[in-house]
Length: 122
Image 1 (cartoon, rainbow, N blue to C red):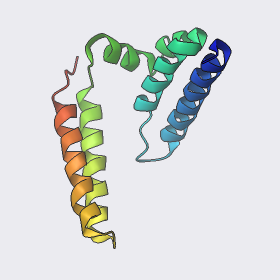
Image 2: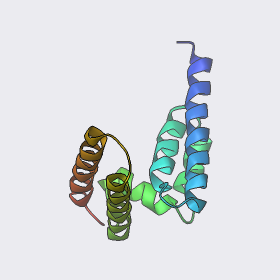
Image 3: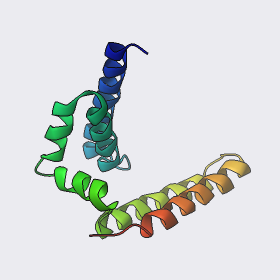
Image 4: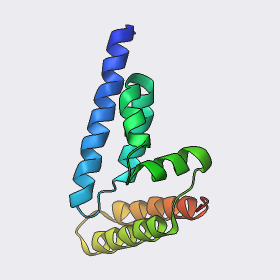
């Protein structure tokens, strides 16, 4: 792949991730930090200035650095994610979704919750 095109695609992914992270600030249920983690990673591939800005951001920079250094997720974030997954599974159970979706989606969420709670916190 042409080097300039690759850099453009990394930048596009980084910008899209930042945009989704910004939307997550105001939209309940859409996480912010995972999108900023993705943005920092993509920025590191094609937009080092954006990566540096995210790593030094006063609010979200520490979470990105903790993840990069130790794979750490704060306990508060674990509880928030678990609560949102539980709420989502409950609403899904009350919906008209097919039975496979009603069973499969909570199973995936449970696997994610187990993985998440096994991550270090500090």
